[in-house]
Length: 385
Image 1: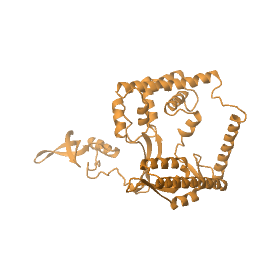
Image 2: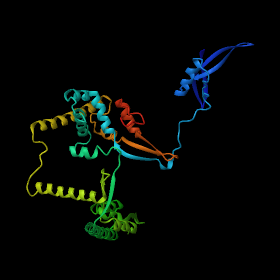
Image 3: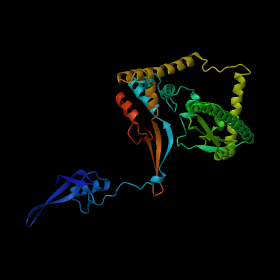
Image 4: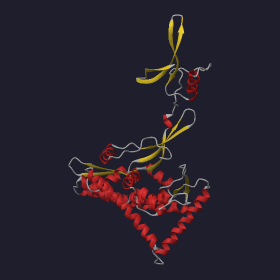
């Protein structure tokens, strides 16, 4: 037996494979026949080729092209959705700088792993990246950077009679202020010749100072035939109906999925009581919180801030070498807009295909990445990427 190279065009593409050939004798002389085709075979086909090459009977391979089943499913494009949007560009850019400086190896060397589930070296890296991307407390990191593994959340719609009366009184007060202000502007337009720009500026200040009821009014500044400005305004009934329906309502959001609505609401009330206690300590008792008290914790906090500053200066130097200026803030903010999303594709068979992907960079982001010589991860990402 011997092999022979073969080529075939299918769907506009040229495919290369091998043919396992066998020579045999006939009355008209030697002939050759194909025993098997060798390409990207699955396990049964590979076993069949092996059995045939060994001369065993009963070994038969499927046709190389005709009987292949396509590995695709039908996706209901109308129900494709995106879930769990997360900031990706900032932490990813920080990791590129960490790799450039070798900080990951440095942390692993000075913080050997022990019996903890999450190594201290990894937590130090998280603190530095969070200080670089969004300076805040460790509580903010726990609440906003680490959602539940499955991404599920619970939303509870609450209604309060006292809150409804309060919000209604606020809407009525702001509505009265806006209406009185509009009448004054309207009277000024009738008494004197005002430029449309001046009227628009007064209108903008009025709406900005009473924004809670600004959606109730539809205003339009026009120019009369003699060049003076006129003001037309009216109230929108649909906004009033929505305000009346939503007054006193608020939404509780939690990553706890195994509690009922009442337990979640009670936990929320307890949090408000704790916040009130902190306000008493800071105001009435004149006590101010101190972030760090022990010397080693103060030094650790300073080290985290210093390392974040090192990453910042490294990005600045890289921007300078790439011809992007000396200030990396604009570059960091622009690349920080890149997000990580979960694309959910429902199939016709009733199952769902879920892929974690990085959003496509915009033209401006692509130019920055090209100058900095950074490449975003290829898609899709696995859970461990």
